Image 1 (spheres, rainbow, N blue to C red):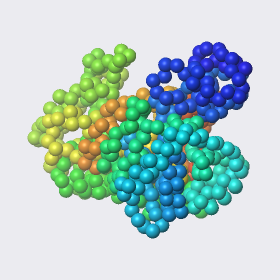
Image 2 (cartoon, rainbow, N blue to C red):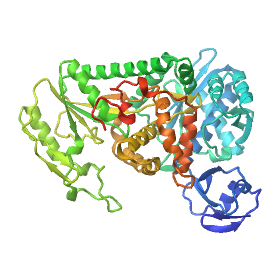
Image 3 (cartoon, rainbow, N blue to C red):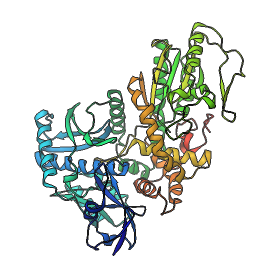
Image 4 (tube, rainbow, N blue to C red):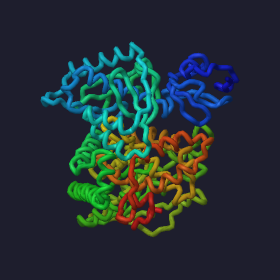
Length: 554
């Protein structure tokens, strides 16, 4: 048969694997090839050429690609979990992937006798994983009856996986084997353990940090540095989810089937409202006059600003919202990016000096005329009256550079209170499959873009990696400087967003470059039972995305 491989028409045998094809034709790749792509369909390298139509256009996915990095992560996760069971066997009570943090994955390992991990334990697991990598053992994929898979997981004590499969519509399920270890994973796998050679293990906070390659340099292990404040926020979120009995998607589905959807919504909203109230009290008690808020795309910054303003009023302060977007420089003075386009995300696109001059004057009790940026004309306009603040007034300032110290260089640390907001998902799919925070935000943005801007899901997905690069450059480096982190993810929200997102994703054509991502997100949303938005309060952050908010958020 003939395939078009990397632009070249070549003859191949139907029983040749894509791993063999990659060895022959994936020339010039700076990172390791880990998947193939036939048209817009992702293919595991253990698949054969006969699995795709004659004449298919075949390309390759490396570990530098988001899909490739996720595949590497899944392979490393399975190797780690098999190593844990190999080293300790039945002494293990549970081994759980808690969350992704920095360049690593954080796991907890609990033993039946209550003993704690130590450095020697970590060394044993690492040495076992290194042996797996050296042996280049195949990740074997097979289809089993879903009921049989559930029974296997029940016997091995993986009750969260057993319960998740209860909600699976398909009568068959793909599982992976590595030696005598069997597991279920959301997504594709590498062909063998020899592909997982770049990793490290570190004892951290009573668990084990599996350090993966950095996405920007996938041939080297990533940083061992853990963002401590973000880690604490994730841990607090997980503890809370476990405390109300909803740590996984299966548990959420169970609650919905019992008619407890409204209860979960109310508990999630109460949890967030309590956290916002505590932040407002802290701002008052510490005498801060300026609140700087930043967070990645679709983290709910605007709704959070309004809810915080309400809570500030509740503690006797008067909040004044200020959008940093109003401090854009005149468009003709906006810096250009490497493509010659206006770079509206760089710090220099804002009039930093004007902002600092006005903030210092306001703090001194002077009056200023604040700008309003006219986006049609591309100029700032000073059309409002004089504005000043009293001792009980607080400026609530929101924008992507809010935590960058250069943005507010003239404002003393004792005057400003910095808040980082993100949607740190409280749920895992199961104990071995996490829900990436970025997936939550991508789905939020897709639903909002369709409702407020008329964008298709294709357009949102096509822009998403560019959005992510901007976050990596301008937002994430400053997150640990925040005085407090706020988690805007609601426990129930993906069950609600599913109802809005699925029709948008199904509309993406199969031949579109965005189709693989749409297919991945659709598979992800399959795990959730849908939940009506009827009981979502009008002041909820989720209303910023699905509509019906009491706040002016679009």
